[in-house]
Length: 340
Image 1 (cartoon, one colour):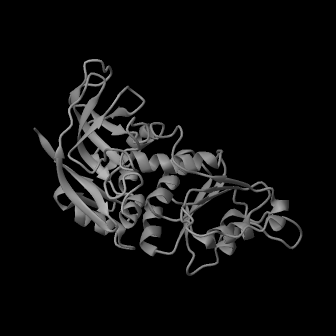
Image 2 (tube, helix red, strand yellow; image 1 turned 180 degrees about the vertical axis):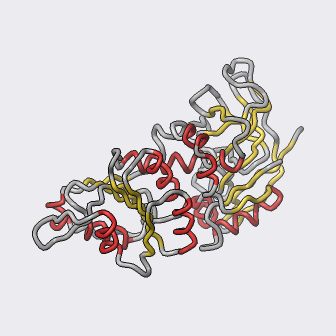
């Protein structure tokens, strides 16, 4: 029996690399040699709680996957051995890949069951770096957050949080031709990266008044006499911090749109009476109902920019170190594990 190595959560706070059976492709399947897999904040959460019910204590990790086709089932069309592909982890028939399903992408091989072009995997150019290809899934999350805000050419936007999702939203917004995009964070290194990725301006919210600075950057559109409001059209919360929601309530002009993709771990207060006259639209954003492969063409054409989001590339033989690095606050921004 052929075997492979795969990463599992085995209990609260415990992860190990296991030797497991290597899958083989059935008539309707494709087998991938995993070449890169990003580490998501959810991986640290699953580790902390010891897995995902009903797979508590036995959860394979990894859902940000790029790989190379090594086996193609006889009934599968549109793929060939050697193709480079990115993966939609949401559609696996045995459960979400790396998020409670029976398989994960932090492994040497991954079986794509019932594969069909445009559904579970799509081909990407062979010269796209593996660590950039592995960004496809998180960049789809960022794209959905942007889509929820319904951006239009000429809009002015602000992104709170310059982590991977916030930076992905920044690149997406700039590719759509918005007039001006601002990024807000408290870490100067992240703000420098935002500028390198195309932000028109950045704000360190630990040092500056965000609303006052937005008034300077986006102009004053008073809500009523004596109530100055920035001319910002779109607010994207990729930080999940209560201060973001408080700031948006203080800043929003009439008709502004807020898209919340950051995970808020505690309830936040909304003063609906005060917001009533703004007629602000508030959209929550989770996953990528249609965006998982919509974002792929942008990832390819702007690979140099998206690639800067990756802060650390770690070989699979140090995968446990990579998980620790990604889970350590402030130690890294986006960690991608690569396999030979």
